[in-house]
Structures are given as C-alpha cells and as structure tokens.
Length: 93
Image (tube, rainbow, N blue to C red; front, side):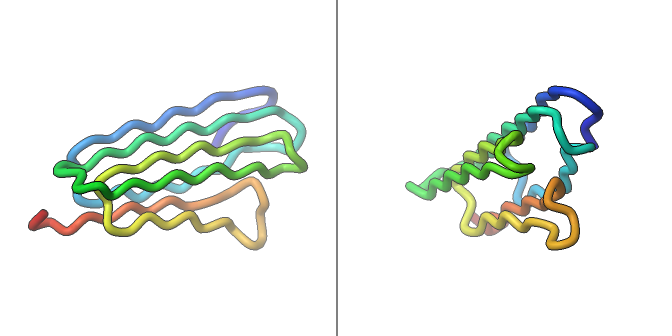
C-alpha cells in the first residue's frame, strides 16, 4: 500500500515463471504512479502493455511484460485504488 501524497512504486522482475502482485495506491487524492516491468526468457515475441488510469484520473499504472503467455490485470471491484497483477509463463519455455 502506498501512502498519502504523491508516490511512485516500481516493480521489476526477470526470469520468474510466475509473478503475482497486489497493489493499493493508498488514500484518494495523491498522484500515484505504479510502473511494472516483467521479463521472462525466451521472449518469443510475446509482449503485453497495459496502461490504466484510476482514482479519478490521478493514479497511473504502466505495465510492460515480455515472454509471458498470460498477463492479467484485475481491478478490485470494491476499492478502485487496488488491483492485482499476475503474469505466467510456461515453466518449460
């Protein structure tokens, strides 16, 4: 969970078969930025880009994933400032 005010969170991961993260940008009102960069080798041309604006336009998610067969962005329906990210690659790739 990010705090009050304007925060920035960066998550970078390379080589993991699965990445699972839950992010909450904290109290409403601050301009928060979440940057996620995930890489699984070999990339094999699999690329995903998700940009999402939320919290009345104040918060921004930038997600880039390469080499994952499945990338899921799941907003929390009961809290607009919370979301999950799951990236999965075949363990044999």
